[in-house]
Image 1: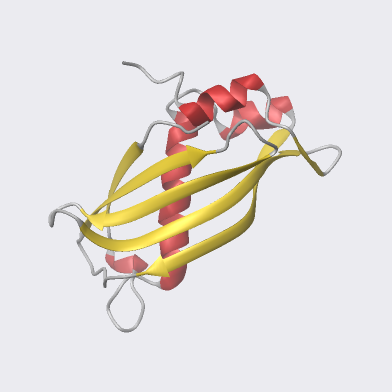
Image 2 (image 1 turned 90 degrees about the vertical axis):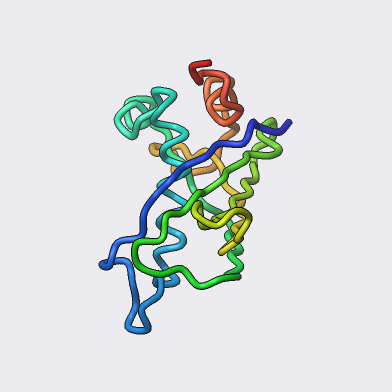
Length: 141
């Protein structure tokens, strides 16, 4: 089962740049993660709620492709879509584009992740509450 597509906007700050004046390669991953956390938080699944439940999210695999240069003060649009959320290992596809230039794709990320039991320290099957978050069922219309 596949989720709706989520959108997250961010502006690149100077502190995110490398010595060549473009977005540091590691910051791409940080921005993609911010977008995924936003999806959870706007549906009430905060880090505090996760800790109360004794679960977390783990990244198992991440493949990023850098396509266009991103510079200071660029406004970015990150699109996120969860896939295969009915399984133990779920997949996420994300894209990053400059929001001021239509369809200028800057980077893509394909990620595999899972739910993690914080006590037993092992991967567990996502329950219905989490599948609903990934699918966007708790979003306000």
